[in-house]
Image (cartoon, rainbow, N blue to C red):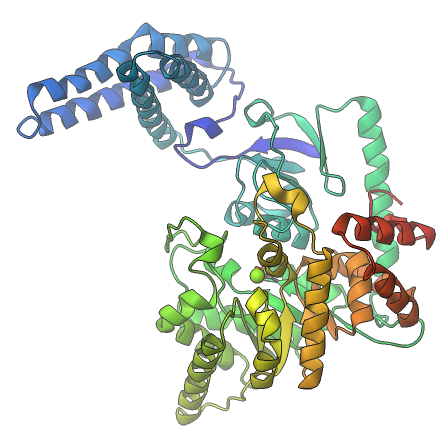
Length: 567
Ligand code: PEP
Ligand code: MG
């Protein structure tokens, strides 16, 4: 619960929110200056093209200049500013209105002028943003709202000020949602009908359990949610008491609970959570926060801090997994199907210089500590694993030759692509452990984009196909006597964790906020009972049925507070 702060990428006119201002005459001056700057740009452009373009083509620039100074664009925008909107918001309204008028025209030449209107709007906006680059002062309890909030946008905001995130695009396993979960803040993804432009500065409630949003809620709703927030806090405090107790079932079966991490700032909460180590450190997050690829020394220092803080507990560092929905601002990738494209190990094997530097930094960081494990993402073919292992051994050999006292870390493979499920045995034979990435595995098995709000209802890791795939991986790993963990979001979902326990998964790695709840479930059940529930689940034919059955089982066992808001 908090105040909505709408953020948007620069020069994207549709994403600009309305914002109330007090000094409208000053804002009109700012707007006029931006228009003047565009007039200058276009005049210069026209001059420069004098020798290249014939007179009649250059006439377009005159049309631009006329439009710019017209009542229709500048006049109406000024009026809107005088009514109290800030310049970018007033400009957005004007541009959208005119674009619409042109788009509906019969004449195809006139219809295309809609693009010119938009182009002019963008040019003015760029100057407005240059004049006053949006530096947002985030209030206490900021609820970040946007069309397409990315993990890097979230990472920029001081986490103590964040109360929630709402994004029009994306879904519960988008990386921004994962990051929000890691920071213990409520998130609603795929809010497709949200009037983003209209809610900046309003009081807003985001219920991350149900996906409901309340804009300017009534006193009654506000009080109800205050009560729920208090209950949640009390439940969390109660669960914190389990911190130093083992995740052991009532019939004495122990399972390791580990945390997922990727930010230095979440090391302290992870340490305090009673986790037995880090099961997944997403190294792409520190890469995202920078302006260029971090050097070997920079990486070494980050990894060293993580390994030291958790020592002697194990820390699993995953090699760079960019691509898909994780872009690096300094390494742009343009693809039609990014999730089926250049991602994870595919990129780092094509750029061994990136991979080698990262592996060197990791192995060096573990000198004297020896609690490092390395995890390889997006393996879909044995040759990729062989190549990666070759490079890791090369680095290890070089470091030995340099006289460093390095120890060969344990190496694991992520099972997150269907081909890896069917080859889990071949993969397990070559490495020390397997880790199931249920987020991508669900996406690729069900052919449902993990970020696409339109198909989000089809995305469910409790789908019978996903459950059977995981069972198959566990069996293949057993044959080769190799441990298996699950490090996707599924591991932190109490009802799914129960099934994973029943399957004989060795460890679960999850966001720190999920850990106490999962521990509670494990301590309140026997493995026999979990196995019985799993065998019931295996008779059900769809994810909805499985979820319903498990939710009911939880309510009956008095654990409903783990799967919905409130106690
Ligand atoms: C996964 O795919 O389940 C996983 C853990 O990796 P990521 O979410 O970073 O893709
Ligand atoms: Mg993945």
